[in-house]
Length: 353
Image (cartoon, rainbow, N blue to C red; front, side, top):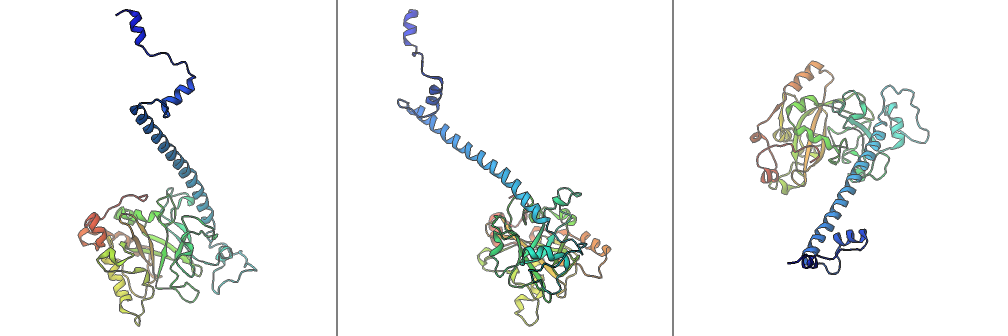
């Protein structure tokens, strides 16, 4: 075959504009073969997925940065015990017996009832601003209002920490067990997200066993964790049985025996992932922290802590902390919905799971 014949079978040079040629290579065009159309379709879909991913990444980065800024602004509202020069706001009527260091925060929002902090739990032990759980506790007339509102009563997706409305916190009364709710946002340092790190094991628990919680009428109260467990929100999640821990508020002998201290204590200890030598009685005061647990839809991760008694020394507290042990999985009461998915095992899948 002559060179002339060889040249005749070669495709003619495409003299169209370079950018048009690029466009025709990636975008469906009249005259395309089936394989060309398929290749271009895959490319377009991939490009769309990539653009969405980049957009979400940018939104996450800058959104998280904005979230952290908002959180620091709220944490700056924390009352300072030494703030004795705080003046009583003229246009706000404050409750009797409320401590003066709360005046500024209370004048901002009259739904504030306390402040909760886990002081040992920081990314930088020397930096107050890196404390992961350090928030005001609010209380409204229902449990919906602060699901998506911050301390300024403005909408925000991570909401606020709020005490169960059923047992109002006042200067003359408080529940034996105050239940406090907070979102698990799977986002660094937001609300109760990092409560899930108590699933990591007994060493983490020992390092972060103490919770600071004051109402607007108290100062310096500390609580030691006595139980950490998976809770349910519906009977169907545990073979028709329900431990409604959020309704164990007052351990009154005249009330239904179901809500007695004995039943409460038995339930949290049976379910707890950890054991200890911490003594608990009906005369003690408790807080229970509740957030969503995502291993199975609808389950809760719950921490219960007892107020450290006035006559307990630091040596006593250290001994209680040292007594923590991880229970064998077979000795832990896990909801049937958990067991059906994961088996009779405990696990930690990360605070961002």
